[in-house]
Length: 115
Image 1 (cartoon, rainbow, N blue to C red):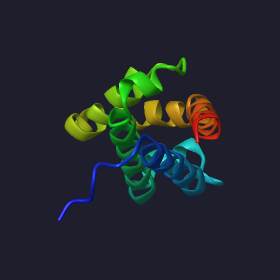
Image 2 (image 1 turned 30 degrees about the horizontal axis):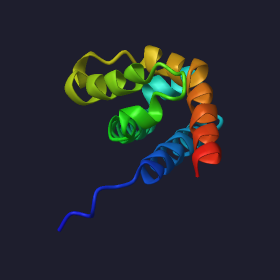
Image 3 (image 1 turned 30 degrees about the vertical axis):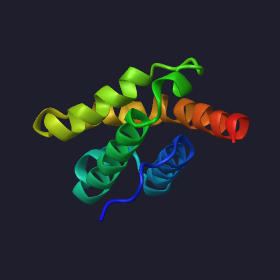
C-alpha cells in the first residue's frame, strides 16, 4: 500500500538527504575515480534521481517563491532516468562541483524559512 501524498517539507527533506548522500559518497573522490568507479557514479546518479523526483513533487506555487532554476533539477532527473546511455560523467562531475552546493543552500533556506 502506498503512503499518503508526501508534504512539501518531506519532499525537501528527501532532497536534502540525497544531497548529503552525494557529498558523503564523493568525499575524497577525484574526477577520474568518479568517472571510472561504476559503484560511486551509479550511487550518485541514483541520488540525483531522488533529488529531481522530490523537487518535481513539491508544489510549484510553493517552490517558485525561491529563485532557482528548478527546471534544471527536474530535467536532469529525466536525463538520468531516460537517457542514461548518453550521460557524460564528466558533466555530472561538473554539476557536483559547481552546482550542488547552491542547491543545498537554497533547500536549507527553504526548510528554515518555511518550517
